[in-house]
Image (cartoon, rainbow, N blue to C red):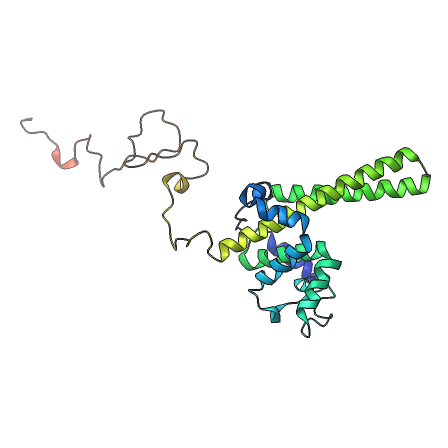
Length: 246
């Protein structure tokens, strides 16, 4: 996949409307044992999740899911298991990101702003630790060196924890795909509040619509009216009234 294709794919992902079954902040409570497993054995989890994302069909495997220039050029068709094992060990971060992109493109899943902030904070912290390490190496300042070591430890901790949460998020999403949460209804009638307009300050009542009084705020549906003149006014054929004489 070339650079232009990658940019185009990133633009397409912005139009996705589905969301992850659980966000990154809720993955620990969603599946605590698996999150701990992902924390202490990340490459093994990445291997299993990629294979599961491919529906256990390794003939479909391409290095980094086809999102890097080296994809398809590493002899994946001859020994996909070995290539996948090499990918998750030598390119762990790319293996996790590739599985994420694979699921997003399959199910049209967008990345929420909260997830973007967490992932962006992880990358920024790594870049800051790298910059401090370079400055400490150039200047030889011990204080900057200590700060660089502290930032490196902190970035490694954030990196390991965020990757564990991301992989748990992938696992929960595939549990949903495979029906482990029970069958999803084919068509469900949304509740009254879900059917209301977003710009309504007050959701409509369930049941019959209330009569709209004078000065009632916008958002309530108007009372039903019959065709023709309102019943409170006399109809045209009623003139003149009975008993009226000129």
